[in-house]
Amino acid sequence: MLTFAILLPFAAAALLAFAPLSAGASRAIAVATAALALLALVVVWARFTPGAGFQAEMEIPWIPALGVAWRVGVDGISLPLALMSGLLFVAAIAWPMEREVNARQYYAWFLFLEGASLGLFLTLDLLLFYVFFDLSLVGMYFLIGRWGHGEAQRAALKFFLYTLAGSLLILLAIIALVLMTDPLTFDMRDLIALQPVAGMDLRAGLILLGLVIGFAIKTPLFPVHTWLPPAHVDAPGAASAILAGVLLKMGTYGLVRIAMQMMRETFATYALAIGILALISILWGSIVAFAQENLKRRIAYTSVNHMGYAVLGIAVAGSAVTGHEAARDLALTGAMVEMVAHGLITGALFLIAGAFWARTQDYQLGHYGGLAGNAPRMMAAMGLASFASLGLPGLAGFVAEVQIFIGAFAVWPWLAALALLGLIVSAALFLGMLQRIFFGDRPPVLDDFTDLTRTEICILAVLLALVVLIGVWPAWLLDMIGAGATLTFGGG
Image (tube, rainbow, N blue to C red; front, side, top):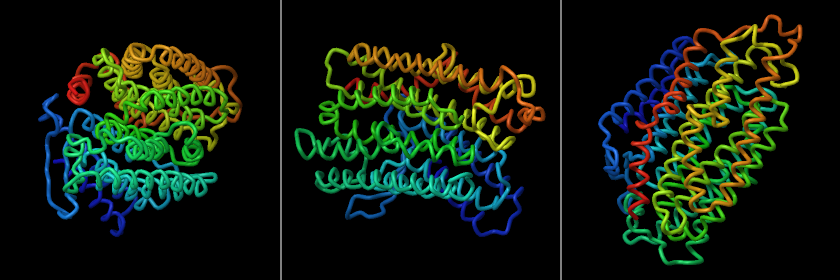
């Protein structure tokens, strides 16, 4: 099932790339393909046993001399991210195009990106992880560069070069890590069990440095985040939803799966430094977001803030502080819930931002106002997503952040206290955004502003219903994630 979920989007992308199909047929094929891939993941989820380690495994030798194989499988860390990614791709592909040009190629690149994204979360081979990591850059580069607006080509190039530089650091670190094994193996399960650099100082520190910088660029963390705002502003709304909801999680997932799981001793040594970097990103992201007058740039900078929370949870979980094992497990669970919640919430926010652009070709907050009467459904959707993003109880963001902060207070209370300031600024920036867009006087140019269409409502309803479900009844998600976190760290 996992191999099917990865290869089906690639096959459909190849079909759309070369078959002379209409825009409507291309969209129907793309939506059906993404839905089938998601269905395959749901089947795996239905058979999943929390706490039982890697499951649904499959292995086919590829380069035996190097220990490389087609290896796939899921655990409580990867399965929730794969499910969230599969759902977001269905939503993004079904979302109306902002510019109806080259629809066949547009949907082909979306499916190509889906195959690469699911492959990264589902593979158990470190070399294939790197291959899928790089392939995701190609798909997003073309979606931004060809279907974006403004300075889209420049933004796409900056995105590609930044993240390619990070991926090269990751490749060097992976090679150095694998060379410590005998016989050579790229099997993630073996590397987690072997801990190949345990007890080493300088070499292990350099390997971890390469991984942290590379994944920090992808996440992104301060100060290597500057590629993110222009990429979001100039990308189509649907591409922004995938960039924020899926691609950013590749960085935090890599920190967990490779840096923390395969290098526990070294990660613990530098966990506090990583936690401080996360704190800076939390505060910087929220403060800079508050200052933005461009709707998409404001949402983009909140991703720096929210992914900072996720990295803070990861740093706490990987720390060497003894006597707080339960708190560390809780922090990791919170970090994983934060990744899922951020994907759903910010994905919805970027889709809504795309709806604004489709109607006005304008992101400037100062040009809006008084839209509550014209677009009550849009106001409701954006209001719910915004309140979830600022951490309102009863919504998914709160479930994630309360676990991160409880874990952080147990391990590094001063760090957690400072990070709380980010929540205050986030509340101000989202409430101010809603007030400026939907209340006050409406400019005459917006008199004909239309509300969400039926298609847009249905897509947002699914995403936001999950945000509410996780906030009200999180047990089903916490059991899946928490068992994986406890298995990995609580016992070892």
